[in-house]
Length: 123
Image (cartoon, rainbow, N blue to C red; front, side):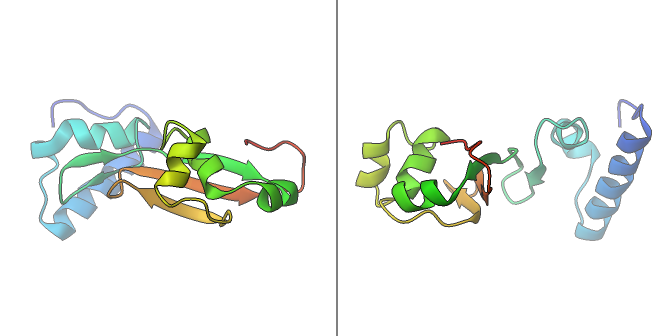
């Protein structure tokens, strides 16, 4: 490795990543930049099949009114998965909002939909 971690959290993360690589037959040195991105918080993890970063999820807060009146197309347009609500609907996302984690585009984009009781909603 060309650089040493600086904080206690970074050291813990490097130890975890090193152990993960050792257990799965990967080299940290071969993909140092990608693993460094995980440690420094640029993305969540590395897709070890394609050696690409997995981005942080977009968090969407919804309440009962959103769930009743909006669709997944609204969520996907809000998260910029699709350029517009109509485009998302054309691609089959005119479905009720489902809470939880959703992956899109071969697991390159992630959205987490969380229900809140507040009126402080994302969409």
